[in-house]
Length: 144
Ligand SMILES: O=c1ccn([C@H]2C[C@H](O)[C@@H](COP(=O)(O)OP(=O)(O)OP(=O)(O)O)O2)c(=O)[nH]1
Image 1 (cartoon, helix red, strand yellow):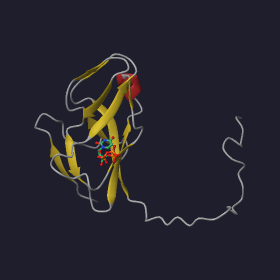
Image 2: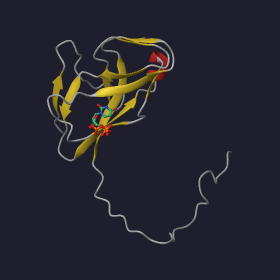
Image 3: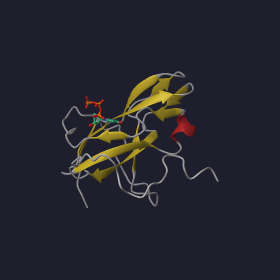
């Protein structure tokens, strides 16, 4: 188990919880009512700020049903929350683009997150050619 220090915007923000039997990803909620016109972009506040455990980062992705329910897509596709993003003003947001006119209500569950360990430090060792077994490049396995 790991502990996360979490600050909520105020008492009206529903507290984070596991949805029983779902998965270990944890849903995040819009911190305010949001109305967007088709094509409009907004950083939607999620009402939480966290100090992640040492050695971890967090990944935010949409829920599978987010587009169906709200007509928004996450503009960065996957959000990365750095371990260093841990101050009292480091609030989490979902950057979202509306593909239709839409209304999101405060406390609607619009995305989800999990924490992951940082990758090891990478050393880039330049070579003139790779000697691994060749796959034939992108798309080489065909369609069927
Ligand atoms: O979906 C996201 C992605 C990022 N963040 C926060 C946490 C992250 O640590 C910080 C900066 O993100 P990133 O480094 O990916 O963005 P940037 O555009 O490079 O911003 P910065 O100049 O603040 O590093 O913004 C979010 O709240 N939601």
